[in-house]
Image (cartoon, rainbow over all chains, first blue to last red; front, side):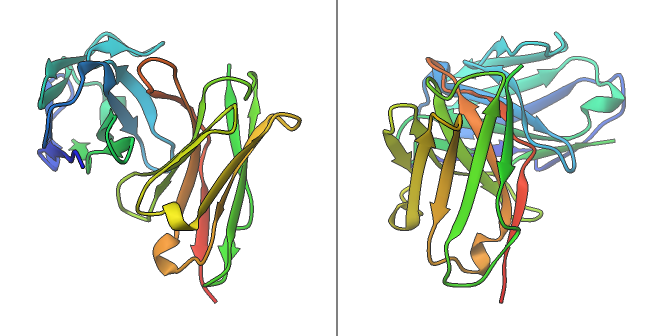
Length: 108
Length: 118
């Protein structure tokens, strides 16, 4: 099983700062099959990035994704108050077909 | 805009079967991959499985022996049955659509809390 490990577990920043979230895979993941989600309390996750670097419809351009192989990054260029949430990376492929990282909590 | 809505009992007794339905509006179940994901209180996300519109399924091996999923095109929805539940199955259960090509989960239901307790 390809395990995704996210770091840090908690990231404390202020509005206007830059956030860099990491997702490391235990084996190589196709860049076509790496996604990022945002989840706010009491809400369902929301797709932000698919295919490592492509923003989903309506996602602000301050969100960007990058990486390849086993190391992937979600960057939020300038934090807005509404960006404080939990972020999950997710891979597709191998067994189980879908798997999520454990999440990074972005807090003020 | 595609919308998904989970429905089913919020309380299930241990050893019984958890049954949920996801109704799709604004789109058809006759394409795409239809997924179930769960999240225990205060914890992360776990993929349960998907059912393709043709009826083909793929399940998480950790749950496979207890799972059944199906799609109902006449009701434009799909369902989840998880048998022999225990307290460890207490979670918010989400349904979500899987995209072709990159398999990202682009539309999600709001989630429904299912508690396993006697």
